[in-house]
Length: 285
Length: 309
Image 1 (cartoon, chains in turn purple, cyan):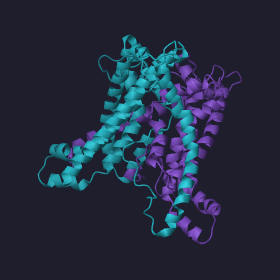
Image 2: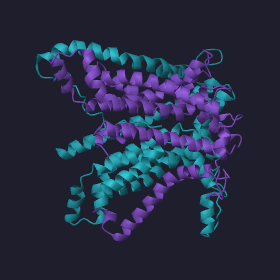
Image 3: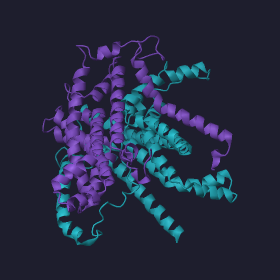
Image 4: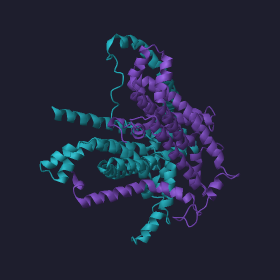
């Protein structure tokens, strides 16, 4: 059809180039996972011999990683709670009600995703520094919620839009109260979306660097901040194992969302369109 | 990281006010409005306090002199000497990155639209999974790959490429490679969404009427996907502007970006006013980009309307 499609050479060239681009995307990730099991954690590829030593080092007694890991997990858990609570109410307001100034509210909700994160982080710093809340896990979680809640809102909105409102009307016509409808109809149908929102909120917070960097203090650093510091200032080969763990957490999170969606048999497959807001184009899988 | 796309406009809302059939809807409308307000309040209040107000205070701080009066000298500082160089480097690196992402992303997205659904799904997985893996981790992967004895240089030496090993780290090449790899999934997703919407009948029609491949591409396909290209490149540019991790870890002194400068001014120099001015400049650049997108959208729509009439 156009250009390259009709000519065989063109097609082969396009395929080879595209495979190279895929390699470009996947290689750094694969490399980290493989290297983390190599005895020479910073060097040769493929490794000459294999070891689990770096992982043992990460969890060794004198290691500074477990503290960072548990802080990150705690912050991410708090962020998830805040973000899902805000996301659920906001999505209900945006999809299931008549809201004055709706587009203004929607714009406000999406704004944190396009505003440079450094600006958000700086503002947070100016807010929490005078309150001497730097290094407080709650402050970091409150900050992360600004980034996580828009994503939660978008995911839950997409789910609510997929639920036929007539089902709720039907229940109402048969005498179900508002709470019963929410509990028996809306919530079970929206559950996969809520789980997805929770998982993405968690991972957003768990991987977030900039706000944590501005809001952490010397003795409270989140995992990404710790990784960054190690990469920038002192070389600690166990960082490769930590990076591999971060990869595992992200893939696990995506798998959970995938499984839940499948179980909920949510036909407008969520991941892609929802996350990037291109739902207008239809679904992908 | 996963920023939403402002363009394709939010499709018509589920509940178009007033369009509901019959009186039941209308009678509920007062209650529905109250219900909406009640539910919208938490996030609005939250974002006003923790998002809008902090940015507003940044704005105030950026025009506040040491004596508390009004001044613009923080902006003057930000726009001269080394600071100006850093600002220009930020614009340059962002432009290079979004251009490279656009070219590579176009290639990949186009290829995916030509694949069979099963393969397309698998390839999309390779694109999407990295998108959800921490940029910090991916940057670290590139640091290992691009070192003097990294896999890339070893391969180039092995292939007897003249000049190898190259210096690929702590310079602009490294930064652009790293940042592009972080931005690419996003660009591909945006482009793919647009390309999939292209009606294949149109290109086939052009070909059947004797248009060559190049002509079909240039006159039919490209205009159809052009809005998507503009959208993807401007959004990528905006996201790069405030980006920190990859340039800080993979760049040299000449690749310092504004975000790193802000970080340094706050953390090391305790210079909040200067940092605020820089932040506001970034904010203005972002708004300029978003405005540009709106403008393009309007022009495109006007043109389409004229074409239809």
